[in-house]
Length: 321
Image (cartoon, rainbow, N blue to C red; front, side, top):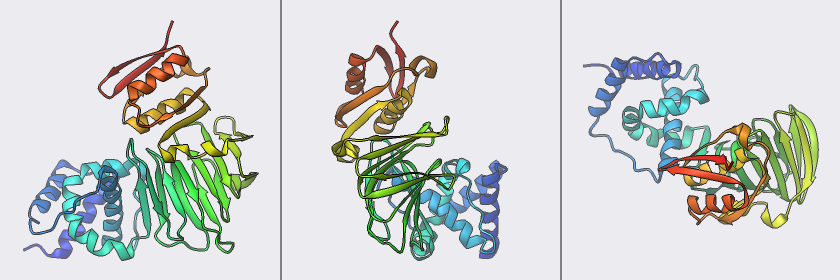
């Protein structure tokens, strides 16, 4: 009979090779066979796809922490979802009893990923409130330290509990936002050139490479361009700052890349277009998320010289001749 410690060591070795892309089909089959031998272990029902994806990534990190206590490798972002998909059958079953028994009191980081067409609101450990838009991803600790820091890829609206002794920070790919207590919106999709911070109430400080860019107060908006390494400060309509959280698509003078990403996140479609063909126009759109994707595209096409072809979830858009 194989000892439990030997099984755990083999599982750890397979997971490590999955991260480096060197895992063999035979090893994956072994993991699958091991899983199928665990019929007595309870399975877990997920609330939705986003919940499943979040727990899959968390399970993998937790398994590493349990099996390799001396040095816990970090699952690289570019492999995380590939790993979760590759071992879904094996790891979900394996971790079902192990993860839900041990994860809650010991896991350090929480990852929230919002699926297409969805949004999520929840409270942070300090009772601050966050609304995440479709396609957004946020990482934060189970318990905050001296600095209340979160990592964001996507769009989120924050309503922060004041605490002068523990500043709150939002870290994005290009900029950081520091605040003591306020409400503000951050739009920081890694696939877009521009990162945007808009303040609804209070005051925030925006930094790039640890250098202060500007201080924003209510109705101020800062837009930072990655390609130009410059920012612009402007005024925003307070009523429209976080309209997306109340069921609206609200865009003001954005490029086509942002319009396309917004529709992809909202409707779970893939939009194909020629960036060079679309680079000159700016788009303003304000409509209910209850509209269908074709209704929204018809609305945009009624204002701009665009035409589209749609086949299931694939949409091709180009300018009219």
